[in-house]
Length: 85
Image (cartoon, rainbow, N blue to C red):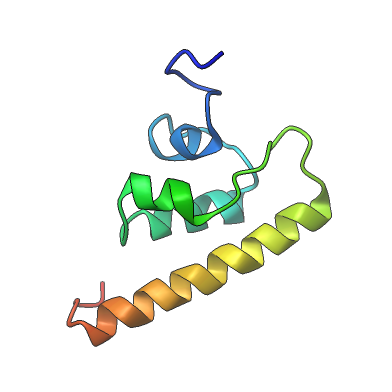
């Protein structure tokens, strides 16, 4: 049962508790994406699978999906006038 703390959900573990969840690359991509959308939008954006039983193939595929979404959000932000950092 969710208690509102660490290990409740991979997204909050990454963004709120700054824990290592999937792998460094995936976790970094999630943090970067969170700069463009709210945590609520991010929660709905992906299938947040269990990191404890994740296979290497799942992590590779998730990294690809995260990278594509980040690129999409960066392009959208740039076209809407956001400044690059």
